Length: 152
Ligand SMILES: CC(C)(COP(=O)(O)OP(=O)(O)OC[C@H]1O[C@@H](n2cnc3c(N)ncnc32)[C@H](O)[C@@H]1OP(=O)(O)O)[C@@H](O)C(=O)NCCC(=O)NCCS
Image 1: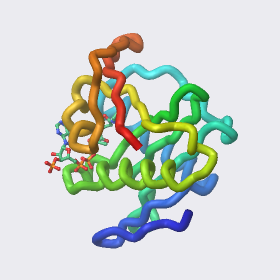
Image 2: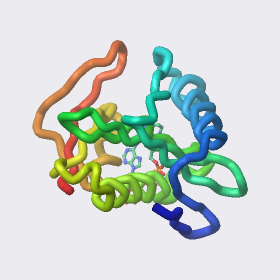
Image 3: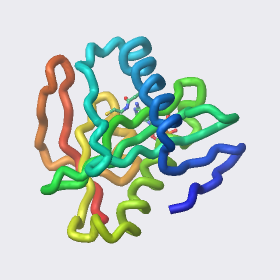
């Protein structure tokens, strides 16, 4: 799927290997240093089941999102926007790109909705992206989350 160009020279596309490495550094910076969350090591090198989408601005990764094919559900995760560019609609653009990618990719055709675990703090953001919660929750260590759905 080709990248899409959005306002002010931001481009969204599937990550190259180099961009993926940069995206992991952005995630580590935001989750560990900005949000002060004590996350365990991330293991997502298995590219048969995962697909990383990046947002590029001025040759730098400023956003990331991962699609994960979990057999029983198709999940979005690892969503992050560089705080410098937060609040400009870029997070929603990343989510919409991923949902379009899923809808247009034959290998995901058996799914009729996409899921994610949202921290309580980001529930409203995901609701604005079209997700809803049916009451299911789960704690991952110190992080309390809601299981959310968006219909495809
Ligand atoms: C969550 C995150 C990806 C949102 O990205 P963003 O680019 O700032 O969000 P957008 O500008 O696209 O926001 C879209 C809408 O959601 C709202 N929104 C965004 N973050 C919100 C929050 N934390 N709480 C409530 N509303 C929020 C915006 O106000 C906007 O509303 P509008 O359409 O009425 O104007 C970004 O803040 C981030 O990287 N956070 C840290 C990492 C993280 O928590 N990831 C999620 C893990 S579950």
